[in-house]
Image (cartoon, rainbow, N blue to C red; front, side, top):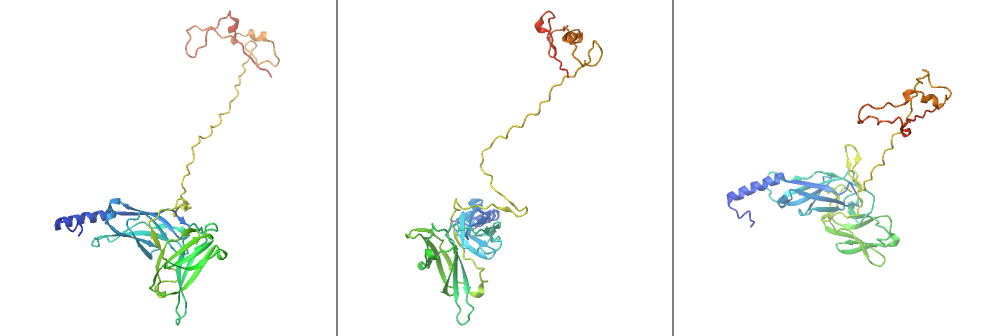
Length: 341
């Protein structure tokens, strides 16, 4: 018996109302780690807001392409979902949270929908399985189709296919291609199996192993051929070396790229403004009342011009005033240079 059931009836009702209020305020924040993913595996983060209300959830359900529903532990804060059909157009996923109390009016909480796509890059060993039915009413056969991409010669010189824990087929180095497709018959609808793929080097060292895939053989009439997805979910964070593809704003079709951590550098100083040459305007000679001479008349001619001698100041030196000049001191004589053309 739970602690809630041990409470008196009135207290239990009050406690239930408080819990239902917390459930109504609860939000599921589900975000994918990238917009594009290699292989057939997506990585995401699952947050419950507030985190203290996670205890109200019985289970999470990952809904892929609005049709495939996969339950997983509500304690998962990071998820990795493998086995998705990479040929689907415009794939999407969201998460539903199912409460422990089935009597509450709001039966489910739903996160926002995340769009994504798959690139053609082979990052790890993630096979995809599907089924094909033989068009023969007298001998109806169901084929299990296994597809995967080669993860590189340095990591795989041999592949081993394991069904229900037993090694059933070997693909050796001479048979290795860029992509593989293996068909296995003898399956019946309703049977439950597991599949696993292992990569090894020639010396027998295991380099990579796929997630263990659980599947039930579907009936031919129950699904469209090629549309079924056998998805496996684990509590696995995204690998740090996974290539990231930025998200896209659907309205503006712009990619949101992270800002690189570059060191700030001061911009180069702007060039100084050009220096204008200081031109002295020539005044007419006051002694002869005409424009400057065409020929140099001699320096004595200009010493006779009284306008070229600074007058003696009659007041104390102030800001903006010229200093006094001693007429008897040759060092204080005013000298003006005039250039003639």
